[in-house]
Image (cartoon, rainbow, N blue to C red; front, side, top):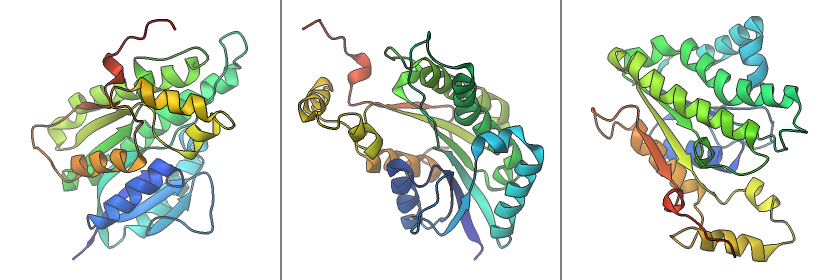
Length: 248
């Protein structure tokens, strides 16, 4: 039986690793992609990729697509998970135009380029596109203007793709997590465990999310949960997206 392939970007991060492992358990062969290289990769196949260059350089895009297709020569693509993201944090006054531009290119434009590159493959399998967006697409905080606007763009892209390619049999989804327990999040609270504990308490569930929870929803969507489910934006937020906080 031909391999059932799934592409996962940002596979070296905590969420990417969890997604890759969960999909492998579901019987998929995972092609993981990341700008970082590690001695151990949590997937069947690994391709190092610079997603900004992938979008901006047609020759580089063609080269990477050939690498992917060489891996898939005896199989078919069933899903694309756009998980990779860059997070540039700074005030509007200090944020460089280059950092703002890179945020849009990596977080929105590259996912579109990947969908466009492999749309025919996904059409053949009735596959799925899962975009890992963020609660920042609609609820954000100071200094997140680059990241928040890019995630709003990714959620908007999800809605538009669902309308544009849904009739081709390809389903498109977005997951919008709030705080997830990753190395990146914990590094922001380094030396301040009280603040991390308070972050847990902010969520109505009294805890932040785990990478495995993002992975579980991703697998659920890819495995054809419902033929009528398309364009859905799933808020994985512990309920915080509906909560107001009074000043202390």
